[in-house]
Each structure stands twice: as structure tokens, then as C-alpha cells.
Length: 328
Ligand code: SIN
Figure 1 (cartoon, rainbow, N blue to C red):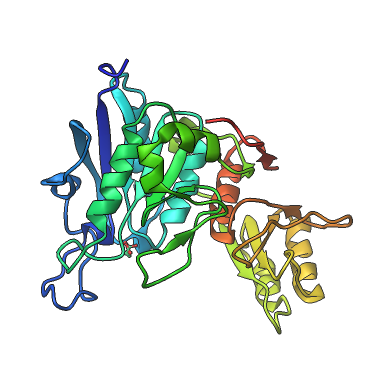
Figure 2 (cartoon, rainbow, N blue to C red):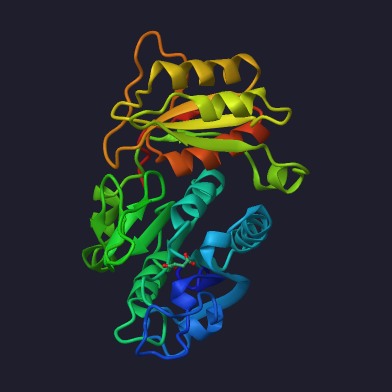
């Protein structure tokens, strides 16, 4: 068995982990996505003997879009189906990493381990964090058993659902509901499996094949509630000739919003759009209340909910299913 699943695959998409600074002393002035996946593993000290690398894209993840996502999904599916592959690592820019993570979680949550990682410092500046993150990611992806889709970053393992970039400078850039220290985890995977479980979250069932057939992507917008938010923006869009197919509202606190915003979104809903309610708070779950006019979504931040609602609109079911905590 150990012999059989001997490979770990690294799929590169770009980001700061593959970034290069023309002048390494000016660490902030770099170009993301300059290095290939094979450049990243070259010379890396790792416990994996058989690493295969492949280039999906070399982009700054602020430019992530459906064409790149579909290429990534197709290549990931291909590699996960190979008998000799233990797991896959995806290298990615940190800016939209949580959105890609939830896309992959929606499609591949029940297959082999998929680890997504990145870095906050370009590859050629002082003390880059990419090599350590990648080493940990390879180690987890190459271990027996499946952890589902996870992010390994700055010495921690995070579930895809709820993963959020919370710092635009620090190496410790991500948080989630229940991060597990990775140094401990890779040393003791049995204990990791006992302690780490994917959280309960809103999921929809959609296949990679179904996505590949999509000709026009549903338009799903995100609207934040805030002081003075009166719903005018939503109302204007709802009244225009091309209105969004879906809305995710990042409400205040327990997903609350002004009467004006609620009425505007209710109008959108009455005209056929789907509305999901989340919170702009970094932690905690939105609780459904009697009299709710919109679907409550748990376990996803608003940006992730936008991705999942887009998927739900191309899937047979629109209402998300809430999963329990599976054993891994
Ligand atoms: C990106 O998201 O591609 C650039 C920023 C980063 O990777 O930290």
C-alpha cells in the first residue's frame, strides 16, 4: 500500500510563494507567480521521495477566475484518480486562497488529501516562509489516510470551510474555527486525525463534470451591511435590466441588517434571485431565527458563501445541506 501510493503531486497556480523580487532588499516590490511549481520544490528538503509537479497557472491570485479554477479542478481530478498518488498540494496566492479552498472542498471533500498552501514573502527575499509551508504541506499530503481539503500555513492546519485570511502582512495570515499546529500534526498524524475534523458547514453537491459544462456562470454579488446601509445599491441593481442571480449578504453580528437592505433583498428574492445570509464577523456561526426571510449559511465566510452559492446555482439543489463532522 505504502509502495503503491508513492507520489505526491504539486499543482502550481502562482502567488507570492512563487514570487520574485527584482531587488531582494525591497521585499514588497515583487511579482507574484514568477516561479514554476518545479522551481518551488527544487532543492527543498522534504520527506517525500516522489514528487510530481505541474503548472496550472502563474497568476497573482487577485486575478483568479473560473477559467483558471476549471483548469485546476480538471488537473486535480486527474491526479486524485491515479492509484499511485497519495495526495495533492496546490500552491496558491494568499489573497483568494480561501475561495479556492472552498471550491475544492465542495468538489473533492471525500477523496484524498488536498493541501493548499502559499506564502507571505516572495521566494528570494530574506527568510521566505514558502519553503517551510510547502514542506509541511508535502508531508501532510504524503501521509496515509485522508484529511479532506485543508490549508497548511505558518505551522497550522486549517479546514477549508471557514478559512479566512486575517492579516495582510504577518506570516501568520490565516485563521479558522479550529486550527491545529502542523509541526505536532505531521509528527503524529494519528493524533491529528483524532483531533482535527472538518467542521459542520453548508455544502452543495455538484460534480467537476457538471462545472465543465457551464457556459454562462451565474452572477452572485456580495453586499455588506454597515451603519447607514439603506439597501439603495441592491434596489438599483434589482431594478436594472440585468440583475444578479444571487446575493450573499454579510450582515452585522448574527447576520442582521437594516429594514431597507432586508426589503431590497426580499424584492430581489421575489424576482427569482437567491439570497444567503452570513455574518461579517470573523468568528461564530449565524443562528437561524424564526421569521428569517433568507437562507442562513453556516461555516463559511461571506466570500466563501459567494463561491458556494454560485456552485449551488449550477447544481441540482439550491438549498445548502449542513454536514455533520465526519471522522477522518
Ligand atoms: C496573491 O494572492 O497571489 C498575492 C499575495 C500573496 O500570495 O500573498
